Length: 405
Image (cartoon, rainbow, N blue to C red; front, side, top):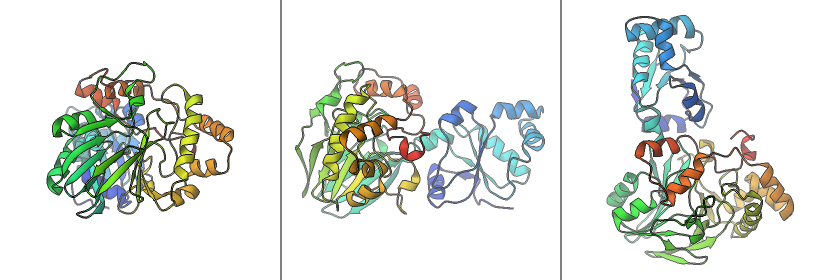
């Protein structure tokens, strides 16, 4: 019989176990459509069973909740739940799955419950230093459940935040802990997969907010943004302490996408190049035209010095990260290991454009609405924002992931 040691796992505990490739079994009691849209993923394959909570109660047929769950498990799921592997119970917010965990423990299973459920996991942030010194610090702030990455660059007490995510607490807490002042906020593009925290963080800190003007127009609605921003232009320099970031306009994923080069050491690539793949060019509804732009922009990026470390805006699998959970790779390494870039290097422009268009994943209709939110065209309540952001991002091409994304 396996043991867990704790009866409740926090989202931080879960991340540690996923990074360590610990073996456990997931018993997810949400509705089936919720499970299909957003499930736990790790570096290693997570064996899982989805059996909705209300079906557990109905099938058990007892007046007492725990007894009913136990009866259903004993009758219907005995052969589907492992006795030799720890079980983690999961629901939407951590409440109903705790009753399931209690029943399993009473039946002799090693079982823990995920605190605050998938909502807590989806809103969990991890902050990891890439470089940490007085003259230059770089922090990677991620939402592991969504595969979203953002960055803070700090030097001599001054800081720039790149692609801040919706919840502001990680940035405000880091500002206080590391004793720097957030003075500038840059969105590398108008995001479609998540709600930007840029305008709200600007209002909270007094920092200026920057966006390329091409992304201040909704690409489907063709309506101008109502948010306040300072325009970014190709070649513009953003000083930060003893260092500076230089903007490279690289349209393709969006018309206004910019990468930010820090000296000759790092490149914050936004949604241009990821670790295993490259970004999709179809989220503006003009895939053929944007694929042509994307091809030219990617060629510009791979001509940069090979020693530069690219820090991406997303990841699609935890396996793309290093041992410390950091996501980044040199341009030299990406030229050979990144499927999209290696295809680009051996293709003509026309061939590569055909490759892009043949590799598009399924379009997520919610992305159109998220772009409206980020442009300030609509302001949904918090509950709706949570629903819009539910699940992993699908900003990368599907080709590198077997076409299943």
